[in-house]
Length: 231
Image (cartoon, rainbow, N blue to C red; front, side):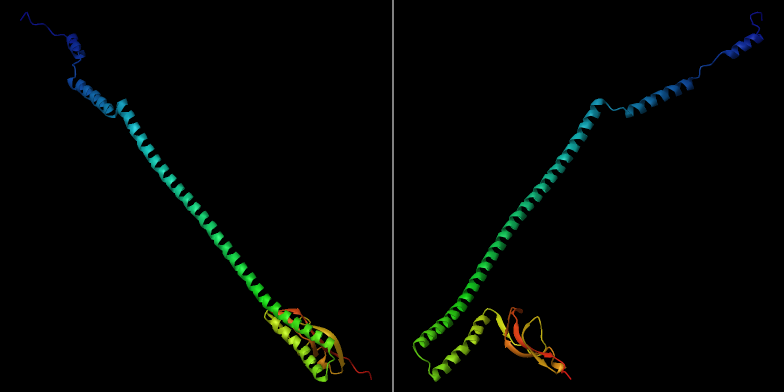
């Protein structure tokens, strides 16, 4: 009994201050550190892999740019080709139009010359006939019968000349009714006491002439003029 040590209050307090290691806490800390390292490691990419990936992206972008550049050049070349074709077509078209215009103008000129040539030859024939007649009557005294023939010949000259100019589109006209200043000229006035006939045509002294619907020589007329009788 003498070997038994008496336990005092101080011994109990000392025992209470002793810290018992917590194995579970240390294990938890180790697990947390290893998990965080694995997590960080999963996001860590080596420099060589990152550089290779960037190079691949650059190559893809360059390929796309080259493709776009080729498409752009193709479209530009197509537009230039179409533009050149249009210029050639327009130049060819303009040449055709110029050639057709020249041919039409030549045809028109030849047609007019041909038309005038026929008219000129008809006028020359009338001139020859008049000179032949003048030459004959210079050497011969006209008999009554010849005088009648001469008058008939002279009377036929105006209608013949009108037929000739009609081939050129010139037409003669003679008017009746009211005086029209755009188509007639007054050579003579005849006074009357009938107010209803005032400014009406009394007589056509010379026919008027129209060319393509336009008056080129107005008709010469005598016109009635109303005048009150003096009382």
